[in-house]
Every structure is written in structure tokens, then in C-alpha cells.
Length: 135
Image 1 (cartoon, rainbow, N blue to C red):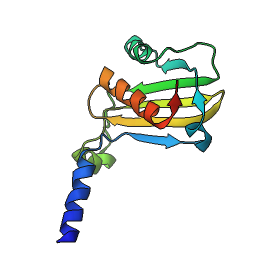
Image 2: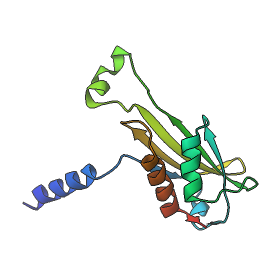
Image 3: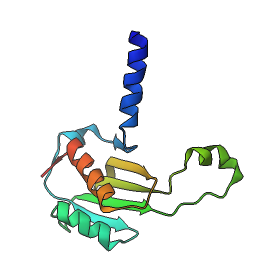
Image 4: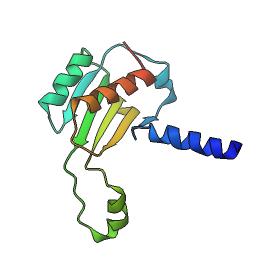
């Protein structure tokens, strides 16, 4: 019975995941006080920039740089991926990388099943803020 309950609990918590992942590339970043960040969105997207600017006051001249990249409308036409297509391939992704100068410190990544929207951006920035000490 205990084994059955633990399997159910595991399935329940897996079902609540949004599929995003965070990666800490430099463990010192967790304790660092990030007092400013600059931002770059690639490819450029005014909606993403406006959403992020509503969440944080970015500074153009800063050692920390938030690099946001995304892709939408991904279509796979290869028959080699038919098994993955049956389970639903993502149609896009959102990646947020925090670098200090050119050193990668932190990455947030999420596969997207639908078009990128403001909530995806807000959720990603919030998860980054939950992991790091951003002022």
C-alpha cells in the first residue's frame, strides 16, 4: 500500500511541473548580490522587452547581462522523430541566461507547447529571482 501511495504522490507532483529547468553554472552566483543587470533580447522583440522592463529596472552599463532568446513556430518534418511527434514536440522555447561579463552564471530554459506570451516571460523571470539574490 505504501508503495502504491508513493507512486501516486510522485505522479501528482510530476503533473504539476511546468517543464521549465534552471541551471546554476557558477555556485557563487547564488550568494552574490546582483544590484544591476543589462538586458538583450534576441531576436529583438518589443513585447518581451516591455514585459521585462515592467518587472525590473535594467541598467545599460552593468557587469551582469540578462540575455533572452526564444524561438516559436518550430515544426519538425522529419520521419525520424515520429515517436516524439506522437507525444507532442514543443513548438518553441524560451531561454534566459545571466552572464557576468562573458561568464555564464545561470540559465532558465522552458520548452513551449504554445506561442510565447507575457506569462511565460514573467514566470521565467520570477523563477530566476527565486534562485538568485536580485536587487
